[in-house]
Length: 190
Image (cartoon, rainbow, N blue to C red; front, top):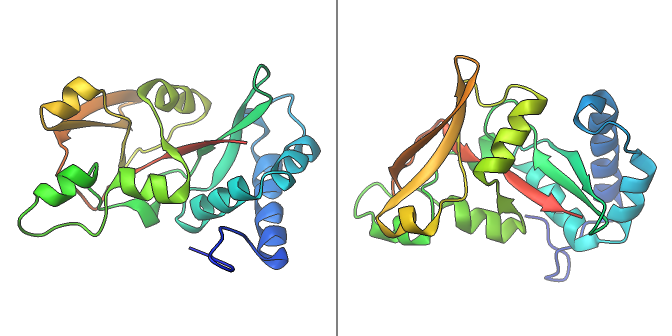
């Protein structure tokens, strides 16, 4: 986490590095955002420094964020983590704080929900995860926690997704579980 004066701000050098990486990824993956222009995305980012900080957090944890859609009604670009596998810097985490605190032994260092909140992003929903998978094949060797409906969470469970056999699967697990190959993917609206 990069902080300057206890605010979530990036230095000029960090911003330039982030913009260069995002622009390069944007141009190499036009299939993810046909009809959108990088210059408009960058202008929107420059006006939202808190969001820029969150994108940098996505990048630093291995998410490889990229634009996947544009919401015309809200005038917002939508970024998802587009790393081939679940982001490396966000694996081996249980689902949420309650699950983390319920573990008596071998606690993971963090939870997906706590990390996402700290980064200023949201976990993907099942619908968003399926939309992402229509763009390319993701999580062929890993899995990713997704937002879990309250009724499932109240019973102690949480859900995650992956892609196997050229299909997207939704599974369940105890929310306190964690695995080296399971992380989470996030979304950010700018």
